Length: 126
Image (cartoon, rainbow, N blue to C red):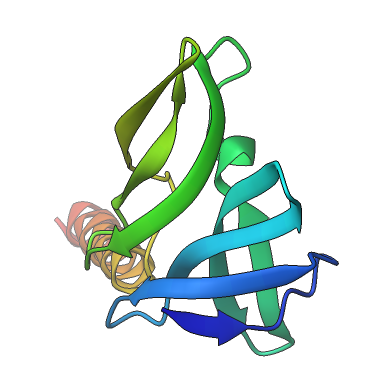
């Protein structure tokens, strides 16, 4: 466990895991009984802190996600939380595209544009 700065104003924060993409997960205490699972991501403007509960749908049966234990290379996060009033393990898969996903998407769109343009040229010449 590594203590971390909590830009969101928490009393105390800690990091439990980090992946190769630089996503850090852990938790933040705001008070004795207010413990929140947290994810930190870095961009050109600094670190962004996200409470994992903010990533859940509004009709989720989960109460508070209290601690994120680890994160893998796909961005999936495992941790502890309260499910329908009882402690439970969670696996959260945030819908946050990784840089590699954006690169593949842009490459694919570029190739589609190239193929479409080539077909237009061949159609006009033929």
